[in-house]
Each structure stands twice: as C-alpha cells, then as structure tokens.
Image (cartoon, rainbow over all chains, first blue to last red; front, top):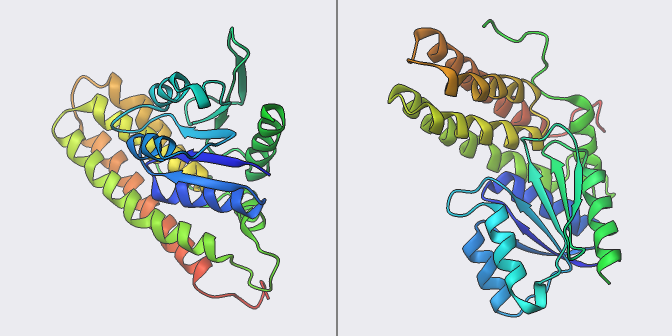
Length: 124
Length: 134
C-alpha cells in the first residue's frame, strides 16, 4: 500500500476519494487547496502517487503538478488528474517517463483505486 | 429545453459502487464516510448554484459556465445523474449566449431544483437503513 496525495477543493469529493483510498489500505495526505498540499510536502510528507483535481480556484491541478515536480523528492511523482472535461480515461507519459493519467469524474470508484495501485507499484 | 424526466436523479449503479467502495464490511448498509460525503455535498452544491445564478444575472457567462462545469464534476462523483446532465447542458450553452434570456434563467432554475432534489434523495438514503437494505 502506498501514500497518496489527494487535492480537491470540493469537500464532498475530497472526503469521498480519501475514504475510498483509505478503505483500500492506502495512507492519504488530503488537502483542500494547492497551497495546503505544497505546505504538507514541504513538511516532509512523501507520496508515491498524487490525485489532483484540475479545476481549482487559486491554482489548477496542472500548475500544482508542475510545482510538485520542481521538488527533487517528488520530481517523478505519477499524477492522476480528475477531470470532468474528458469523456473517457486517457494516459500520457512525458519525455522523462513520468506518467499522468486523466480520469473522468464519475469513473467507477474501483477504477480510481486500481489506477492508484498500478501507479504506486510502478513508482516503487 | 424541457425537464429531464428520462434521467434519474441518482445513477443507481454508481450509488451501489460508492456504497461498496466505502463499506467497511460491517452490517451498516450506509457507510459512515458516505453519510459524510452526502452531508458535505448539499451545502457546497447549493452555494455553487447561488454563485452560478448571480454570475448569470450579472451577464458573466464564462464564469457561470465554469461554475456549471464544477457542479457537473462534483455531481458526477456521487452519481447525481440529472444534475450532471443539466449542468453539462448549461456549461455548453452559457458561453455561446449573446444575452441572458428568461429561458436560460429557467434552465438555471431547473438545475437548482434537480440539485435540491438530489440532496434530499441522498439525505433520505443515508438517514437510516430501510427494511430492503437490512
């Protein structure tokens, strides 16, 4: 089981995703905004996977992912973006081999958990 | 743009999956985390819809469309099928409108109604176990 950073400004979604992942035995670092997430990382928390909402008021999930990857310890952190824009799941691997997976909001809960497990297994 | 009687308030398959995903394997048919999710969904979605209506009335339709997008996504997470359908329709329509019409305000009203009905339905489902669930 792994440690997962979950960032979403919607309290219901944050509670839901946190509950699903902790129920599967993962440790969750939950933040309801990107600044809180960065603060938690700066205090030494080290996730193996991040689950980020894309659309947040102060900073998008994409911008947060860029900041996360500027830090040496989380430079290769695989990220799952939760999006309600895409109609289906998509996976991208950048030039440095870092994975980003886009999951549509409303994807079955099992898919989120399976994706986290797949990415955390690859990260270890 | 009529009502959406063909779209259920709640996607039953999604609801069952949510229950299963949050179940701790005890006898409670409604996991405590799911109660908490429902408890948090209602006020947040109501506040977002108040903002959405205010933006529409002020003619800030791009901002209103962003809020509709957020309402759609958050609804999708809990299987709020009718909210997702109505919010998606608004998200697509609002940026294309030259002016705010009575029709689009009615569409906002329809989404508000669906959101309130969804919150009430979810509250009823998580309030206490029914005989069917036991």
